[in-house]
Structure formats: C-alpha cells, structure tokens
Amino acid sequence: MSLFQKITTQDQLDFIKNLGLLIKSGKPVNESFGILAKQATSPTLKKELEDAKLKVEKGTSVHEVFEESPHFGTVFVSFVRAGEESGTLEKNLNYLAQWLERNNKLKKEIGSATLYPKIIVTFAVILGAILTVFILPQIVPIFDTLDTQLPITTRILLWISDAVRESGLFLFGGIAVLAVAFWLISKIESVKRIWHQVVFSIPVAGDIAKEYQLTVIAQLIATLFGSGVNINESLGIVSDSVTNISYKEALDKIRERVEKGTGLAEAMTEYPELFPDVFVSVVATGEETGSYGDAFQYLANFFSSRVSEKTQNLPTVLEPALLVVIGIFVAFIASAIIMPIYEVTQGIY
Image 1: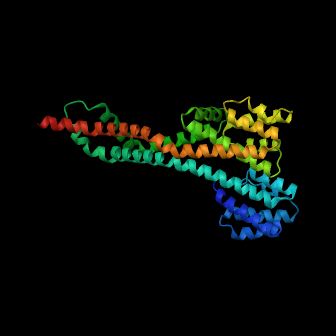
Image 2: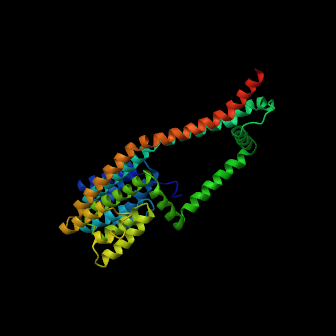
Image 3: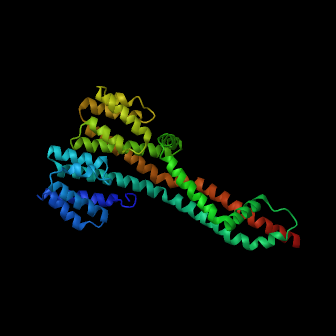
C-alpha cells in the first residue's frame, strides 16, 4: 500500500514549517502533532501525525518516531535527531525546510525544461498512431488497385496498421509486460550502476545530471553542517540521499577514508570524474579555514546556478534535434501515404 499512500514534498514542507512555528510559539511537540493532524489534507500524513502524537506521549523521541515511517527519509530523521540532541529542534526544522525548498525548486526547473520535448514527442506519437490505425486503412482499397509494388515505407506502415488492428490487445499487453520487466531490471544494482554511468556520458544531459548531484551534495552538507551534524555523519546522510549510484559508492568510500584521518578534499581527488577540480579546491579551502559550511554553501550556489542556466537553455539545444526527428517522421508518413496516391494519379494521366 505504501506505493499508493505517499506524502508529497509540498505536504512535508508545509508540515515542517508549521511544526517549527508551533514549537517556536511554545507548544509541546505532542500537542503540535495533534494540531497539525487536524489540519492535514493528506490522509496518510494525518495518520502519521496521529500515531506520532501517541508515541511521543509514551516517551518515544521525535526522530525515533519518524525512523519507523516509510514516508520520511534519512535526511528528515537526521535533521530532527540533531535538533533534539542539541536542543535546537525549531532551528533545525527551519534548516530542513530550506533544504526541501531548494531541492524541490531545482527538480521543478529540470522538469520544466524537459516538458517541451516531452509534449512534442507525445503529439508526434499520437498523430502517427491516428494516421496508422484510422486513416491508412481507409485508403488501402486505393492501394490495392495499383499494379505496381508499394513503396517500402507504405508496406511498413500497412504492416504496423494490420498488427495493431488484428493483435492490438496482445501488442499493448506485450509492451506493458516489457515496461514492467524493464522497471524490475532497472532495480538490479549492477544494471542501475551501468545505466547511471551511461547517463553521465550523454551530451548536455550528462553534464546537467552530474552538476545536479554536486548541487544536492553541497547543499545538503552545508545545511547539515550548519544544523550541528559533523562532517562524517553528514557524508553518511548524503550517501543515502543522492540518486546516482556512482556518487553513492564514492561517498561511502570517501567517508571511510575521512574516518581514518584522510582530509575530505584529498579523499575526493580519488574520483576526478565525479568531483571536478573546482569542487575539490573549494572543499580544501574550507578545510584549511575551518569553514566547511561556507565552502559547501558556495559550491551549492555555484552549481545550482549552472544547473538552472543549462536547464533554461535545454529547449534551445534540443530544438534542432527535435526538428530533425519530427522532419524524418513526417517525411516517412508522407512518403508512405502520398507516394502511392501520386502513382495512381500519374497512371490516370
């Protein structure tokens, strides 16, 4: 059921902000949970907060309550735990809200940049399906009157049309099975590792993906460090939070070396394909001056602006490629339908 009972990022953000506000005003945590449960529009969040209220009243710490929940991740729990241990829960909730807002904004920018290509490709597929399934069968009788062999494009289109009309159910069922199989295979660690490496090798998109991971790492470490979490623990939390397995594995190994006494910047130099020179240099400066928080915040701002700039320019970069793809698609459809008709008219005259 957890797949269908999710708590959205916006719901989490509203909850965190309101909880911080109530705690700042002097409300006990258990009462705050009760108030927010009544206000919650998400049934799942409402149930979570009602359960949290009861558990806190029985003596369970706030971070332990949410550790048991499948809806709140490592980052959330770590901020809350650090706030409880240092007596600055309200302050840490504010840090957490800032982190969620920045990360959510970055994701929305990337999503908006890829919306245009998605719409164009979707309309092209829908148009092709309409022509193949509904329009083409209507003019097949005309093609049957021809004494000449139909062009290869027409024969391909006719074969697709016949396959969809005669075996459409099996065809779409097979596509659904393949999609599910692909999804399951993509969860395999070795397959995921290969795919994530392939993503980095894609022109433009690979740079955006890499710089997005660097932004997440830098922003999260800066926020965690500012909230009182030490660098070793921060690396562990960030490792659990990044979405790319290459960065996850690198961060795990970097953390091991840092725990043994190696400097963070020095440990990062072992992975030049993941951490560029500018990133490592700023981290090294932060180590030397004892200002990790400022160093990582600078990196977060720097790479965030780069991601924003590249995502804004993405439609312009993709437009020529889309025009070529759409042009080939239109040429294929036109040659498949118009060429035979042209031959018929030539025969008449």
